[in-house]
Image (cartoon, rainbow, N blue to C red; front, side):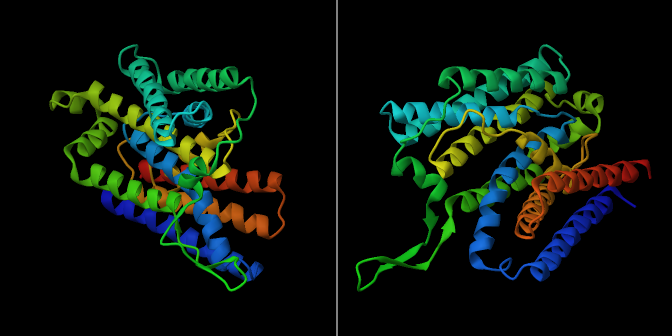
Length: 327
């Protein structure tokens, strides 16, 4: 079986799992197939998908990024603090993105220049970013950010609202939430990058055989640095979107999100050994996690049991990946 056939098999398995979960939960709950629940699932999946796309690019190079959850919290609170201080919302969001990119740059420099193992470098950044977020906010949430700050996370494309005879708004079509639109755009852009661009081929080459890539003329340090900066930028974007959805900036937000991102990538077929992975598979993996959580919630399953089940799913995905490479 060729590597491409293995990738297709893994993606098919993830898709089959997704369809199986949809079939099971549609039977256990009548409300599962409602439009409202579908929008809820899509919104819940967006954060996992953003971070999962970032994790895919990093893992393809043979690295790992454990800091994205803390970076998103730091980026979100920086954006909120600037808006609270009177800065325009776009400027605050841009600052959040830049903070995320800066953290990613530091991660990349630690890996490429200081030659630290990615696990250690990003673990250190996780602690630093979380500590800074708690320090600058005194571990307090930032509220009162206004409707304009909430627009990115709560607005929708093509929403249709009519004013009824009683003067109250009547929602004809809820529209497509902006975070979902952004997820589709990011997935398409990342897919084109990995499949069509020279930079994407270099990412795969580094993960497949670093020394061969270097001898082939690939700028290994530069490409690796790009992967970590991209991861930081997407973490910053996730923080801005998430805080906008909540209309409150929480310095403790994003705990364990890095594990969800890695899990989505692995479930979708990204190999932890590097050199293998697709954005479409990662998005499917993100929906597997999102639908699993949503369906278990609607079925009344406790949060503790959900953690156990999701952990088992991750273990199975990694085991399948290991078996694939042994063969």
